[in-house]
Length: 150
Image (cartoon, rainbow, N blue to C red):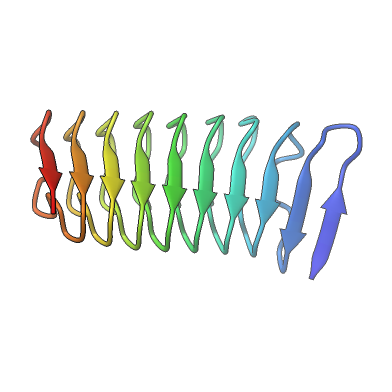
C-alpha cells in the first residue's frame, strides 16, 4: 500500500498500484489502479479498485466503486456510485448512475439518470432517460427521452 500527496498539484493517490491520476492537478485516486490511464484529465475523483481506470483526458468525473466508469476515456460530468456503475461509458457526458450495475453498458448515451440496482443496465446510446428503481428500463438500449419509476 502506498500513499502519495503532491502538495504542488493537489493530486492524492493511494492503493496497491497508486500511480493513477497522471500527476494532474486536483485528481483524487484511492484504490488499486484507480485513474490508472489518466493523462491530462483534471478534477476527477476515483475511489475503488480500477475506478475511472481508462480515463485519459476527461475531467470533472466522480466514480466510487469497483470498476465504476472503468472504460471512460473522454466523457465528462459523470457521477457513478456503485460496483460497475457506468462501467462501459466511453465518451458520453452528464450521466448519473447510483446502484450496482446502474447504466453499466452505457457507452455514448448522454444526460441519463439511473438510480437502483441494474437501472438502465443495457442502455448503450439512449439519452435523456430517467430510471428510478431496481431494473427500471433495464432492457432499454437505444431509446431516448424515457422515464420509469418502480
